[in-house]
Every structure is written in C-alpha cells, then in structure tokens.
Amino acid sequence: MTKRLISFAFIIFLFASCKKETEIFTTASVNDYFPLQVGKYITYDLDSTIFTNFNQTETVRHYQAQYKVEAQTTDNLGRPGYTIYRYLRADSTQNWAIDNVFTVFPTGKSIEYIQDNLRFIKLMEPITDGFSWKGNSYLAFDPYRSYVFANPAFMEDWNYTYENVDSPLTINSKDFQNTITVFEVSDSTGDPKISGTQYAEKTYSIEKYAKNVGLIYKDFIHWEYQGTDNTYKGFGEKLSIIDYN
Image 1 (tube, one colour):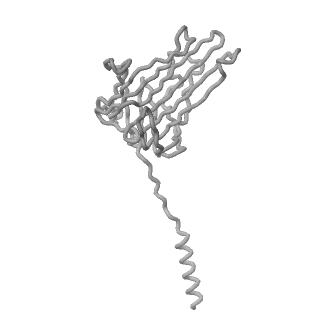
Image 2 (cartoon, rainbow, N blue to C red):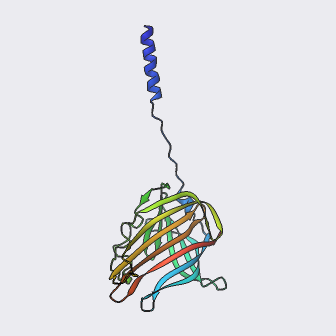
Image 3 (cartoon, rainbow, N blue to C red):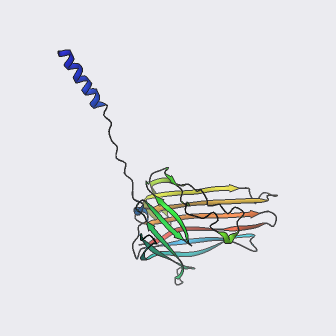
C-alpha cells in the first residue's frame, strides 16, 4: 500500500513538473513610433534626386521639409485618420510654402499612409526583429506610370522587415534611445559605369523611426539606365530629422 502511494505521488509530481507554462508575448504599439495629433510636426533636411541634362546627369537638390499634422479626417469606411501637410523651403532664411498633402490612418495594428493616391502600409505589429509584411500590397502594378519605366512593377512584392528594434541612434546630433529600422528593398541589375552596359536598374529603400517621435530618416532611390542613349529615368528622396515637437 505504501509503495502504491509513493508511486501515485511520483506520477502527480511528474505531471505537475511537465505542465506547460504559457509565455505572454508583448509588443510595442505602432502608434508609439508614428504618434499623431493635430499640431505635431517634424522638420527634415531633404535631398531630392532627379536626372537633368537630357536625363544624363544625376542631380541632387537640397531643401528643408516640414511635415505637420493639420487636421483629423475619416476615410470612406468611416475610419479616423489625420491629414498631414508638407511644407518646403530652400533654407531657414525662406518662408514655408505648402508642397503636398498626405493622409494617415492608424488601424490599431498598422499604419496606412497615403501619398499621391498611393497607399502604403508603413508599420505593422508585432514590432520585433525579423517580422516582415507586404508594405506595398495596395499598390497598382504600375504606380508611377508617368515615368514609363521599363520595369513598371519595381515596387511589387517588397517585404518590409524590422531590423535593430529598440536600438539607440543619433541623427544630426540628435540622440534617440529607442528606434526601429524598416528595411524595404535593395536590388540592382547591371552597372552604367561599365562600358557596353545596355540596361541597369537600382532600387533601394529604408526608413527609421524613433519612439514617441516618428520618422527620423528615410532613403529611397529608383532609377533605370538605357545604354543606347546613356539616359536615366527615376527619382530619389532622402530625409533626415533636424527638428520636431
């Protein structure tokens, strides 16, 4: 009888010790990295890349850009969002002039950003290293038709991926303790510097966000090169934060 009791107690002990523990996974909110309220602004140094001299010369034009949340709005589904105005000026001695208008819709688990009638999923939960999503899934096959690219689907099927989650970062002498990097794409074909190259293409895009601040850095470039006439088509934009409230 005693042996049976001991065996029974041992079985209960094994069952209790093998009981699965439930781990609770927590993630920061996308709203922490894209805070939205009327009156909030971020000012950047903006380098805009275009091609001049009959599309043969890469030219970078410098501006200051301020993105300011001007009003609340709703989309056609009644979801609340925000209207953001972009102001440009050549430098700090000039007055701001409105340049463009964007809308942003925080959905609870993601941030949808509409620019020039193109909808991007900028952030998505969970915010953890290696998590990826199709950030351009709302885009049409040829989102930039006016450029008549040889590869009109260059923005298709990008995997936005989190890197360096919660890392400190310094930009323009401003320190940010909690940042995330969203790596979007890095792709290239051919090299225009090599004699005889008939076609080349480059696409690169990355964004960085700081907690309780928003976008602090962006680097985007896409161009296509035709060797038959030594010309380029494309554009680029680089933003780096210089001020915010």
